[in-house]
Length: 429
Image 1 (tube, rainbow, N blue to C red):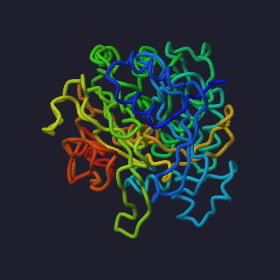
Image 2: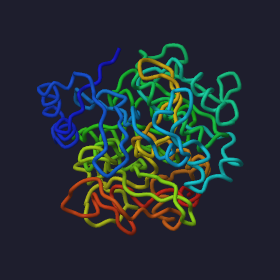
Image 3: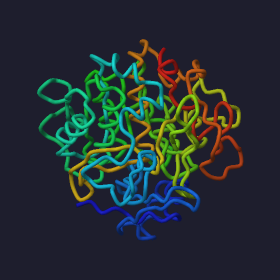
Image 4: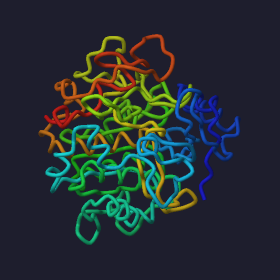
């Protein structure tokens, strides 16, 4: 069984902001980050929701962690909206947003019904989830989505080498991440096929190999819900694993508040930030702010220390790659329903947050929008269609010297990028 390291605020800051990955690894070991994680609680004034990280923090250079947060207590926005008490939340029933909520919030209700047939979304994660297909079936059945199974050709699970039988070692934390990713792809694009590609470990080399395998298998939309500290190796990783013209590759911006992560910093991917999403009386019916729960928990953002700025990104405060490009719901207090039964954390229905939710949501929006044009870099599409996004203009994910790196504003900002989907217009090209 996996042991999750202690997730103290000082440890998170060391992991996210240390330039030297070797130094960061030593700091993690010295501060005892091999002990059990404790759930993080919201700052005063926000919903009293607690959660735990699904995956261990990195212990080695160029190792990645999943960006999934599993709610362990409190009352979510979904429960408040529907008058459900926290005590009534059980593993036998959903306690977070479902497909109809997400489609309503992002203007996708009609497209989700008619689009996606024949398109494949790839989910790239580390380790094996033995219950992936059966848990996916339970989620889709509950919400009345069409079956997606190996037998009907909709679902496929393979290793990073493409084997359907020689799969990696199982891991309960990454199994929760896998369930989250599969369920979000299903919620947004129920007519799409799904290929789950499981890397044999959480190293960037193995996860990158899994990305290449996903593309080789024909996926035009690839979701990556993991990240780690930047390093001088990132430029080589860019060319080895993420330079796939004509493929929409999304990556989580991170869950540790202000600070840049890789591979979200890759110039070839769509970096996806996180918001807090709540129902409202507005014409849209929903409002969003930057997700920030505490000084060390919230959506990632920042100016890359290594990666070259892509030509379509025109903000002037950062001379290199800026994170993020777009965003979607990630706050655990306004989290999404997930069905997971593997391991100690897999007790049935749970609510998850983190930018591990927003990355597969955006990958699936790309899938609804259609096949990217040959030779294109889909990360550029939103920059050419900014009016087809909900501009998020309030909230912050920390402190920074250049305001828009960590604070929402009209137009582009780091935490939410250009905004959240308002239909498909910003994701075509």
